[in-house]
Length: 239
Image: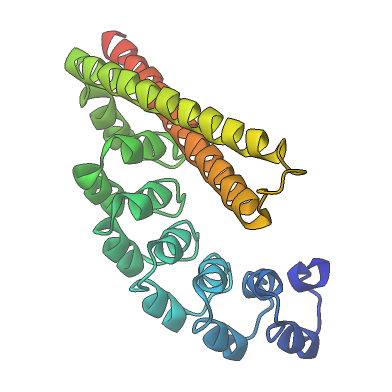
């Protein structure tokens, strides 16, 4: 992996690693700025994880920017949206994309003023938050973001947070139940009725509930950040 990310690696080595059976190696190669256009073109047809890495390549060929901007996978397009080399034509297409893509585009410091305005007009709350953090955000747009919030937005965000907390609590309960079932069953390992297959099934269920719980917890953190941001905007309105 170290070699695959090294910009001084010879092209013949990059060519070899680009065909590696390990997708993580190919993904690391795809993000290497020294990658030839020929290899970039080949990797643009690889799996989504590889295309996502390629989309972030700061030496990405313009023809591939035009190709990846319409990629069927939104994570690939989002990765491209964060790439500082994309021109305004590409930016204009990504402005019209889904929220996931818009949020990454909002943080792109190469985003032109014209596209900043377009993005603001289409932005949801999370995109506005990212746009406000952009160091090269036009001052007029920053002012528009500040003035676009009201006390009603705070109340809505707080209600959303309470909903997310309830979902997180339910997910925690489901995880604890699945975890107990798994460990209770493990306690019967010396029983005649013990099944390795059932043990694996219960473990997988516990792991699945754990991941779901983590997703809900992340959503709670996002909801808290939204409230903090809106309250900050309201304070700036007073100043």
